[in-house]
Amino acid sequence: MRLILMGPPGAGKGTQARFVAEHFGIPAISTGDIFRANVSQGTPLGVEAKRFMDAGEYVPDEVTNLMVRNRIDEADASPGFLLDGYPRTLAQVTELDGMIGFTGHQLDAVVVLTVDPEELVQRLLQRAQTDGRADDTEDVIRRRQEVYAEQTEPLIGVYRERGILVEVDGMGEVDEVTTRIFDALDVVPQS
Ligand code: AP5
Image (tube, rainbow, N blue to C red; front, top):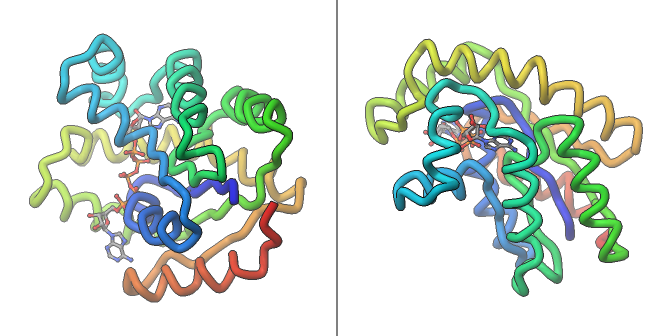
């Protein structure tokens, strides 16, 4: 399976990615997690990414695309993968099409989690108290939401037109959402 998990900040992408990846026996690849690992290790990529992340902006496409290309070239991703948080721009969509097309495979489904805006803010403010993520301040959360609406929401239409969009209600308990995702994906033919 080659899957994308999309949704606004706080929709539950990271939470659900683990369960979905395990279910299909594929790696969950989170661009946010890879950036954060680089930030905490102080690598050049982390130094570059940090200033964008802390401001709630997207890391430039060239940097992000190269990072994903290298990651999906790794052996564990050859049977398939779940991308959490990539692509987020139209340029990233084009780049991903090239990466997957080059291997002769295709994207099987794009899952979009939908959650009420108020619930999103509550989840992230709550996480701010427990995890202390640098970008979970109220101002930066707002900016992340704006950037998502401007740059990533249009991707939903792109994948809908391709007939591979799967919209899933992301409200409710974590395990209820997981069940909805499994039910929706279990009818998708695996490539
Ligand atoms: P990223 O880490 O992907 O952040 P995000 O998209 O803002 O998403 P979050 O991680 O905040 O939320 P989520 O949807 O994963 O929800 P989660 O499961 O964590 O990216 C961070 C930054 O990296 C970006 O802003 C950008 O700078 C950069 N970046 C990443 N990808 C990029 C790209 N492709 N291009 C350019 N830049 C990129 O859940 C949130 C909280 O809610 C948690 O506390 C969780 O426990 C809780 N929760 C989850 N589900 C439920 C539920 N059902 N009920 C109650 N609480 C729940």
